[in-house]
Image (cartoon, rainbow, N blue to C red; front, side, top):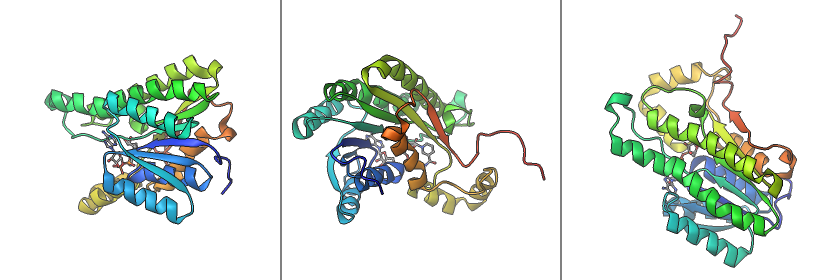
Length: 258
Ligand code: NAD
């Protein structure tokens, strides 16, 4: 692994599991000091152990990404302890229930938007000043292929992920001249522990879903996280306001010639 994040301070939210854990591990393996934030303390401890066993450095923070006071306090803490913030991966999120739109409980809709979308707004609101104080940085927000499609039953999730795409573009436009790059990651079907568990419970659906992916398999968390790390790295220095789709070809459209 290159050591291009050596001396850099990186925040990863949703770092207690899945794509966030994988990204935190890669950032740390490339030399970054990782602030790993989540509401899942056990998951966070496991992520920290994983990173430390591999020789990296991680600090855990119990933070609800939808709570403005907690996000503000986290950024104050990072500023006080580390003095800077070079990269942020705003990744925590939930799927919410699946119901047709007319049956979707309004309180559940608000909840999903709070956790998935308001959190990205809050994250960037408090990350940007800290990054700019340090001379610049890079942000990656986790959207989804649901930012490009209309998955039936998931109106709140799709609305939140479409919203992340919009927020990312605005933040990229506002900060491009201020040495902060902002981009988004759109994962497809990624075999995080929750997805693997759901697939085991519903193997017919999982088989159907995998067969609809041109690559004929789900993504592994580390191959999806690698794209987020790339967007935050110097290798992506001229990439601004983009949403990078990492989905095994799921959203290509069209048909295979057989
Ligand atoms: P995951 O459930 O494994 O990890 C998500 C993490 O976010 C968990 O550790 C959870 O505790 C944390 N989290 C949830 N609510 C939080 C809150 N309020 N404050 C702080 N942390 C909170 O899921 P994952 O698949 O790794 O998902 C990561 C991101 O990727 C999410 O934004 C998700 O929508 C997106 N995504 C996942 C897939 C997929 O197939 N797995 C596909 C597209 C997009």
